[in-house]
Image (cartoon, rainbow, N blue to C red; front, side, top):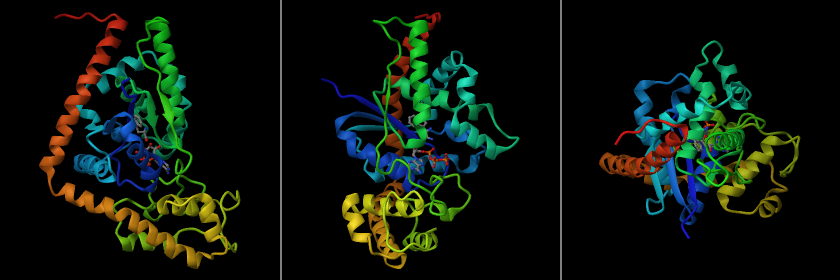
Length: 336
Ligand code: ATP
Ligand code: LTN
């Protein structure tokens, strides 16, 4: 039997942080041998908020290199850049025309990001989930591994599949494949270091709120030293009044590869003065191999170029077939 297909992506909108790693990429890496995987750098999504043209290309390279540095293996996975495969934009347009406007207006991420943009909200920001649906559906993905924040977008994708297949397919001949979200419990929502009730995010203007995968040991030490804590003695998980404590213990547990129960026992009598150096050391050590591999890859742009070129070809061959299927179902004229 052929393997199930996975598709996921990250936007080149800044440095990858521990939330992106633990919520998404680490899970891609762990499961990759069981699936046929497509991982894209979603650069079309990156311009849905104001962006800097001078850094977009470099940021795209960085994310692709980090995929490899985190352990994405080309034996199992294809890495490509979203804008290199035109079918993404084209399918997004076709899906736009069957998407009710009010489905998009109620997306939480849209509402949150629109609030931050003030006057300057683009149509692209509203349309973001439709482009994401196109990314997923072009590859007939079975599973989409993402962090908790993307759950609503996956639900919209699933609603679009039902709507499209109802209108243009038949029960025994669905045009689009129904994808499932793959959201791991641990690490699905890493919180900000400066506010345990907000998710860690690339777009938070406060650098101290996140640990980036490429942070130096000094930066990591500084951020953990300054991170928000509480005055309660002893450390424990799952106390609703201690979101920061839960977040930092969770980070430690995942990065140290220890179970929650082990960490609960180890840290129950700790004060922050004892715990913070431990978390600092663990974080620095777990990021070291990723950083070393990243710098090695960035020193050889021709290799990275060839990876992305091959990725483009492989992605195109799958995506174009789906696009033709969709266009046929919609009744478009074809000429040979
Ligand atoms: P932005 O702040 O620009 O929206 P982001 O930090 O949310 O960016 P994305 O590129 O939107 O990052 O997300 C890439 C992947 O990382 C997605 O699967 C997303 O669910 C996951 N992710 C992002 N932030 C977190 C977080 N704090 N905890 C767990 N997973 C996260
Ligand atoms: N919206 C996602 C990024 C993204 C994505 C995708 C994830 C764009 N297209 C397709 C999974 C599958 C985010 O993490 N902000």
